[in-house]
Length: 620
Image (cartoon, rainbow, N blue to C red; front, side):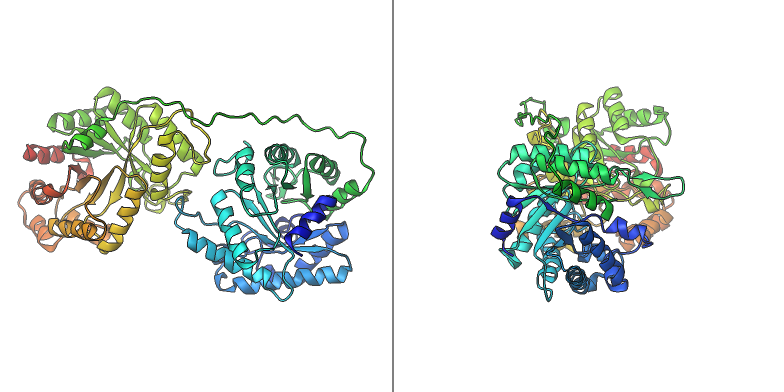
């Protein structure tokens, strides 16, 4: 079947897709920890039985059991080398079920998200993502009997949808493609896209049907479908809702509340609202599909009541507001030497020591203070609260450490707005420490975006007045953004390439790990300049005054990225006054790298701000 034939079918009457596969398999005893796609190999009869149930219920189209059959999702179960086998087996199982029914049912290849975030939000490049989609889609299309169409479903990232479509079109330019996104309770995708934005972007892609699947229940999907239809009335629309929001019983079972009759009513409402392709998602069974079939085939009601949905034309232009440059921005602009010290927020609610130490450092010569966010994954006061108090009570600009780890994309954007509203506009973007090394090793440790992606989000979107989805945030932010750098990396060319990427994404300055080898630092700068030309952003070099010999050995042997030369470690062991020797070494290192940098970032060992003050005294 080609694309034109498929569009003609959907133009003649609404077509009915099948219902859930994953939740159905789970209800039949397959553990949620198991790969539902591996059931194709282990229990093909069970998958075939579910297909037959949906065919008997009246589905016009059934989907292969391949939603997560890509290399990234299968790797979670050690099955990444079986992508082709699992997908081809799924196609064969479905075809056999169709043949045994003697009904003219179409077969759709189900393709879900990769389960790994694409760059710049994540670490998977577009090339890698397209290769993964290509591998799965090629197996579906080029299986012995192949699929009739593709359903790219439960997507939340438009960039991922574009990548999947490109992969499919490279294999089969004329295969029909249905692309649907999923939405949260606030009618936005997980990455913040609203239905009108999704419709406009999907309408630009080389697909045949666009729409909504999963999400909440039929009522929400109806609302979203109506918005999409208003935005793109000429495009075919698909709607496959969950059977309501899932509920957890006291016994640990997950139940979906929407009844089959309720789904039957909504089959009529969804088609009246413009959907040409309807079906069910999580929690639906053959009973729901059967009810939808009866409703679609029965006498049409005289009147179908639809909610009133009006898409408000939003002014996406941001109001230009002039924010004065931060103190750090002025220092970087006029080449003032930056002297900043890392401070850790308190472990409780008392802030007097933090503020006393900040005042002492200011008097010693610090012209900025860096506020760390949950350093070494230890529970502490919010870094923005500490930064706000230091700026308000001491009058020093702060640089807020902003880790991506432990934050989803919604929280990241909300935290950025909060920081800016509090007057905290200097950021140091970093990955952050893994929770396994801290106070709560069992805490969630995931992230939606990597540092390079966050730099791009801040500089190219927030600072132009847009959130990630493209919607307005009313006025542009004015963040100054720093990136992490090692001046003495094990692979200088690799580090130079990463730094160049961060600069291209908008980094304003680089904040380095502690430097203990000035000669190696000079060599790194020379490598960067050989590859990419003169460094276009200033470097603020990290200095760590060593505390004693044991401290030096620990850092060298147990902390990634810390390389302390043998001679320095021996000096710390031999010193009569180790703390003062550490101060002296820090001063010597600064003297060695001074021509390369526009600032120094001091990190006190064990909270010894007095030793940092001694280093600052030596600088004077």
